[in-house]
Image (tube, rainbow, N blue to C red; front, side, top):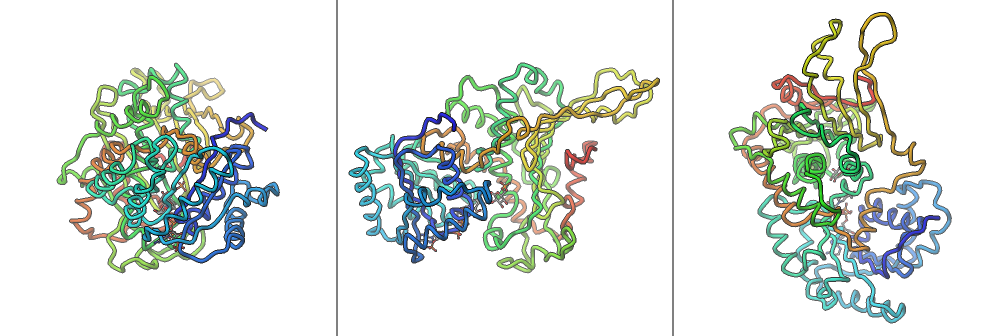
Length: 503
Ligand SMILES: NC(=O)C1=CN([C@@H]2O[C@H](COP(=O)(O)OP(=O)(O)OC[C@H]3O[C@@H](n4cnc5c(N)ncnc54)[C@H](OP(=O)(O)O)[C@@H]3O)[C@@H](O)[C@H]2O)C=CC1
Ligand SMILES: O=C1O[C@H](COP(=O)(O)O)[C@@H](O)[C@H](O)[C@H]1O
């Protein structure tokens, strides 16, 4: 057992307690924190929704989710009964102001029972249109004026565009202090994403070459092998650029490109990241065609199974112009990154589930190896695999054994799980623990969210106004539309598809 410093006494209210996110992610994460001894000594969890559940039926429903989705799978360690005694269900409509007395009553009861004033966390795992109504009612409760112990967690998507994100920020910051607001981007809770900071700033080895003098270009891929999984209704109002690039991919890009922080203070890290977003070159609507590519999948075959096209998915318009694939090229106009393109892409139904970052180094200044092709320099790169593999590998040229000076690309690899010998926590475990501890480092600040929207607005607006002539334009199991390859080919590059193919 680790010697954990547990958070103080806490009550978590989960709006959307009867929903999918809680079932699949939040409760499995909380239960894992409990098994790993990270939950507070005194804690209570109240799921909130309109659906009727008795406490017992609700706990049974959550156990089903834990059994299916916990990283521990079958090894649940038999402590569910202990854990579930801390869980209750509050049947209430978030739009009904009167019903909020259920919340204040529970806080008072726990305060009396525990003899301490607990931290109170309101987790809004509900559709975005419900957030303003619930947040305003919470903002009116006395407990929310205690800025040190009451927190509100807001799920993605944070706004639909720059204007709505700005309005939502105004509403939230009108009721809560910024330090009470935790805007989730679950990629920031992933171990391998956090490890980018350790790799860069805990080692003197990499930082000297981490700039325009040595790096030719950077690729960030967040490929998904799954399709919509019944989320067509949501995706029709989102698209891949909104769903993945505005948040997760731009946050990864910030981790790769930011300057060294002076400390791990939440605001210090977030200042450095927002500097990156503000330095991303704005592209005009006319330039979008040269800098971004969109795609939508057709029907076809996925690992031997017939799958329907996006336009045939439930909840999707047969004429839909929504992007299920997005790729873009960004430049960061600052001293470190001037002239270095950052290529990013994401898509549904692609060939692999693979999220990775590749830093392609420049050619050596003089290449005295006559047997090698002009392209050999491309073998010099560093790849950070975020998922499903969790590793960092450096590819470089080495001499092939024998009497001639012939080179082969070889990989030097660090595998996170092999090295650490234990299962890494899920992103939501890390983030929920941080919320209970009041550490906002891995959460988005208001200005970060808006700066990220500013980066993608020209692309979004252009795509919304100019309908694509060629949708659907990629097949399931592929790597996206031809235009995505053309985006890099124009600069003389190709996508590095999957680090484990050995290419
Ligand atoms: N599911 C996932 O994997 C992910 C989800 N998210 C985000 O999390 C949020 C929730 O998503 P998800 O769980 O999938 O959505 P669901 O549709 O599964 O759940 C919605 C929840 O909201 C509750 N709800 C709806 N109306 C009210 C109301 N008037 N008062 C109280 N509760 C209400 C529903 O409960 P009831 O019907 O009982 O009232 C239900 O619990 C969304 O913002 C989504 O984008 C983000 C990342 C991943
Ligand atoms: O936020 C989202 O992320 C998931 C991908 O998350 P991952 O942790 O499995 O990589 C994506 O499928 C979903 O569309 C999006 O809303």
